[in-house]
Length: 249
Image 1 (cartoon, rainbow, N blue to C red):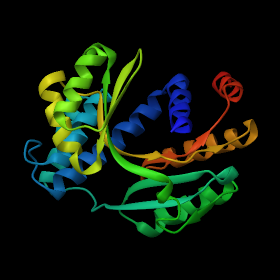
Image 2 (image 1 turned 90 degrees about the vertical axis):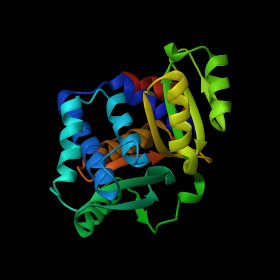
Image 3 (image 1 turned 30 degrees about the vertical axis):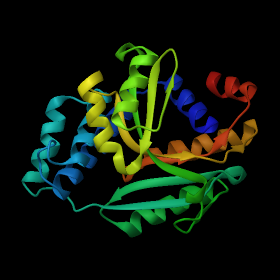
Image 4 (image 1 turned 180 degrees about the vertical axis):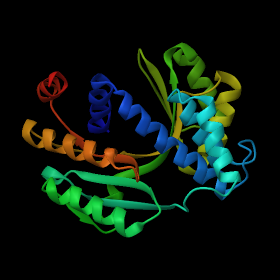
């Protein structure tokens, strides 16, 4: 978990360019369209769609973009995407999970395999690294949503498993299966979440030196730059000294 948190910190400090934000919106729109196609176009009747819309709002995606993605599904437009999860090992033996939405499994699989190979890693079979992660629901609220006690009480009432709070945010963890119900219960008390989605949270971490950490970050950047890739999770961690160097880079 430490590696995952530190990686997120690095990404936040790097900031996002306009091109990156555009790509992020495209990925969010794809998830909204897929969710709307798989169920009803009404978020109140479609838990996956509601979570996708909440995630898009949390990333400041314009309302027009969200509505357009739903209308695309209602009109039967766009490709038919399937969810494919890839698992493998990155540099230094880091466990990596890659979630994709693709309309061409061969294209996506070939691309992901090449990214791993070029970084000195290797793509494995499904389940090859998944046992090192827990698939859980993660709901994030900004610190201003309420005090630690208020959020903790709301989380307990909602049926969540854990809450971690710091100066910037509250992170509520629940089972993957109860994500929709818990997020809806929290929304009634705390308002809309900054983020509400299923994540793969590492239970075992792998330490990397500066050189391998740089290669690992490059692999993650390359994966996330692929239009078919929705999410990337890994279990690497680095020392505070290396983290400072990577952040300053």
